Image (cartoon, rainbow, N blue to C red):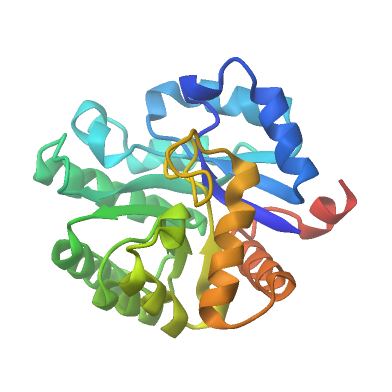
Length: 264
């Protein structure tokens, strides 16, 4: 059994064949998919998908690209929306200095509001961090000092220090198809050195399809390719990495029933 801890099934790329994509994932042994919110103001679309497919759960939050548009979304709003039974995480939120689509102060303000929601609810915060290692590390250390909160550094492609700080603060690290790319030598070296009980896999579909699908539209079924490379990277079997990452997933996403996943 594998889990796709991060995809975007509400994106237009999947609109015409969402049911087929979920079916292909199930056929590939993907028991659960978490479709990630990027705009709270479009959250209803995400919820409707989770209510259509038993295997799909979701988060609630604002992507840093959209931070300036949703500064009026409060911690209280996130907490209230997270009470839906299919909401198992907060986010994705964080810092993106590569595209800089929102002012950096707006990104930080929104990120801290999401941290507060994760702390209050106990739901894991799905963190987006790109080209922002120093500021991300500083905020994580500062906010953890105010009170611990569960989190995952999603689609990890940052430097070693951020991974190590994240793990030291109790966080998890999730790897996407980037791990399979030929030039991701340093990323694989980081993955090999992280504690196995903090590793997860994801697709970030429709983006970042793993080898041998690179350049094509990604989908949850392809998480198996990333898991295969992660297994090779740390020197274990594919069955073992499936067990490890699935155990870690249900440990972090504690609102979700593992027994129910086994039964469906």
